[in-house]
Every structure is written in structure tokens, then in C-alpha cells.
Image (cartoon, rainbow, N blue to C red; front, side, top):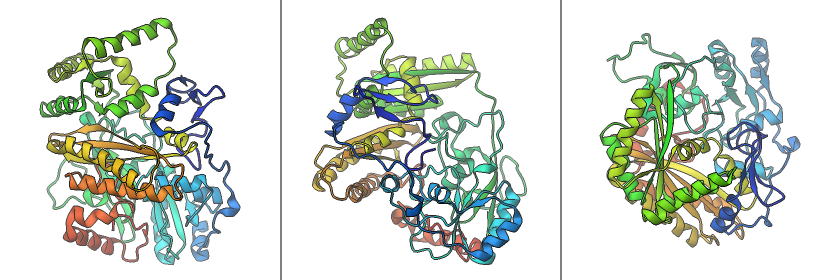
Length: 541
């Protein structure tokens, strides 16, 4: 795994000696392929140049990492338990951050703030109970760590924390089995089940399988007051407020999740990908709303705006034959010339159907019939499959951009259907305006997609990036623009977060989001289960 970027060390985008983009490694369908259009898109979109490089620090300099501030009494008692631990610089740095832009930017420059003093790897629930008991006895600060994919500053150590900080890494507690949960967040490869619960996560296939709150049957959490769990695993109970909802979304502030029972299903018998091209984003959104209204959404349905469609097209691998190239050209001619779609306004929805074969085929026809009513044209399985698989490699692109003075990030929201179009338009316009007013010298990329649909609304995901050459403090400017974009989201009826969570990055808006009384309720729970703030990440509150 990379210590200062996303994902596996052998997988990365780069521009080769011929100036062509390629994706290294052998882990993904895109691995080893040349992407002939990416360079031109990258340079024209951002005003970037392959001659202007901003490489990352290649190796971690352990001597630059702050020396650990260890609680010796805690350490001696921990040794007696036999639970594995480390205070090596590499282990500590790896668990000191998530994947917010400012976190990765600092690591690339070899800069380290406050990092955990110790990393502990419990193997089971009992190990966690022992560790929490010792932390309470010796007043040690604990920060749970799952997969490290947080994009809310949730894993950052509070810089003024004077106690010994212990990263409680639960990654060794996973028991694998051959079933399907259907819960597939974009970070699925690296995130953890405990992390999904702690952040109230959502997955790409939630239309069939549900969000994490729909999948959870039972949770066990260790907190300083003891162990929290229900006595019954019945499918539904009426025993007051659901304690699972105190745990889900608690973001490591109350305790650490040690056991989760979730619903499982057999692996789907049949999968089929698809895609639909619409003349414009408005028609696409109207189609998705109708699909949601008729409650016939496939496992995954995602609608990209035109800028994101152009982006996805730039990631298309080099075709292997003249015949394939000819067919691609024919499809483009049919859509743009014969059907009259404007290539600068059209948008594409990617689809994934799962289930038994007969039902999938019936479902597919129903969705395509609805799409046709909104001007949609079937655009083939290949585009759908490629769009779905790009989900797992797109995070690697930020590292490529940062090699050439381009910084970017994604953020999301949920919004009622009647506000989707206004919110998408206003947020993108606000990003462009803020960049211009703050001295960004090159036009930014501001693009969005609708990723999940509900009866009452949808999740909207934004990508935002710009070329920061000429800026003295690009991370600060980026943060200010993102802050303004979030203000715009809230002003347009969007939520603070659909599935990324709050962490420390967005807690400024929590009183506005849940009311002062709501904040008081959360504080009361925190004060009861963790009166000494042992779980001291300072997320949410």
C-alpha cells in the first residue's frame, strides 16, 4: 500500500516516455492498458503540461516523524496481554491520516503533524475490551482505525492532544466467508465493515441490498462504560430508540465496533451491465426520478453530467482492432448526427442489473422503456461495465494530477428530487466563481453525477479540481472553495453528507444540520459512555 497516495503500490496512472497515459499493475481490468485520449483531455481541461512536474516525496523519512510520546505504564500493561503493537514511524504515519486532499498533499511533501504514538492490533473482541480498559486506567486517547479511507479528517490526531494517542487498528478482526452482502462502497477494497457502520456508509448497489443501516442485524461496541449490544437478534423490535442508531454514524467518538451481524445473500445468478445516453442532464435526471417513482431501479444506476462523460471518454483504453474503432465511430455518428445529440450536452447513465436471469431481462426492458420516454438511447453493455469498473480506479487519478500541479477532491450530498437540478447547477457555478475570485489562474473542473436514487430524492457526487500553478497556498484556497461549495449545497436544500460522514472537516455545520438541541443530545450520550473522552478523535462535536 502507498504511504502517501491511494491504493496499491504497484497500481498507478502515469505518462510514459511517449507521453501516453497508462495504468500500471495487474489488479484491475484497466491495468496494463494505454489510454490514448487522457493526455489531451488532461492538458486541455486544466491547462497543465507534462513539462511542469510536482513529484511526491518518494520515501518516508522516519527521522522527520515526531517522536512517540508513550505512556509507559500503559505500554507495560499492554505487553502483558500479548496483543500486538508497534511504535515504528511507518506504522504510525500510515494510520495518522485518511484521504482528504490536505492530508495527502502534506504527506507528498514529507510533512507530518501529530501522529499516533502507538498502533495496536487487537485480534478479537476480548482484545479490544482489554485495550479499552487499559486506556481508561492510564488515561490514554484511542482512535479506532479500519481501512483508512476516510475523507472527513476523522483519522487526524487532534494537534493539541497531550495524552498518548493509540491507533486501534481493527483490520485483523475480519472473518472472511463466501457470501455476498451487496454492500459495495467506492472504497470497498480498502474500507472495513466497522468503518461502514461507524460512518453510516452507502454502497453502489444499495437499490437492491440497502444501505448499511438496512443490512445491520446486530452490533457489539466496546466503550469506556462497557459493552453495548442488544440481547435479541430478531428482525424488528419495539424497545424504545434503536441503540444501533447511536452507534451507526458515531465515527469513533463513543467506542469501537468489534462485532457486526449483517444480512447476506447468495451470489447473484446473473449480472448484466448497460448504459443509456440522454440528450442532456435534465432529461437524464427526469428519467432517474421516474425509475425511482416506479421502484424499478437496477442494483446500480448512475448518471454522469457532460463534463464527467468527457472525462470518462478520456479514460477509454486503446482499441485493439480497426473494426472496433469503426464501430465506435459509427455509434458516435448515429448519436450525434442521426439523432442530433449535442456532444457538449449529452450525458450517460451506467446500469448494473443483478438477480436471476429471467427477472433481470424483464427488469432491463422496463428501465430501457422508461429511458426511451425521456429521449434515452441504449448505449451498450461495454460502456456500462467500463463505467462501473472505473469506480475502483478513479481514486488513483488524483495522485496523477498532483504529479503535475493539479489538485482535486470529491464530495457528496443528498437532496430532494425537486432540488437536484438547481443544486447541481448552482454548486458548479459557485465553484467556478470562487476559484476565479481567489486567484486560481486556470479554469477549474466542476462536475457531478447522480449516484443513488430514493423515493424522495437522490445522492449527488461532485468532482472538483484545478491547476494550482502560481498559487502560494493551494491547499488553503482549495479548502475555502470547498467550504463555499458546501455552503451552497446547504443553501440549496442538500444534506451535510449522504455517506462520507462528518469527521472534523464538516462538524462546523452540525448545529445547523441537526439543531442545537440535537447537538445537546449527542453530547449527553458522549458524556455518559465516555466521560473522560478516551475516544478523543473529536469528530462530530
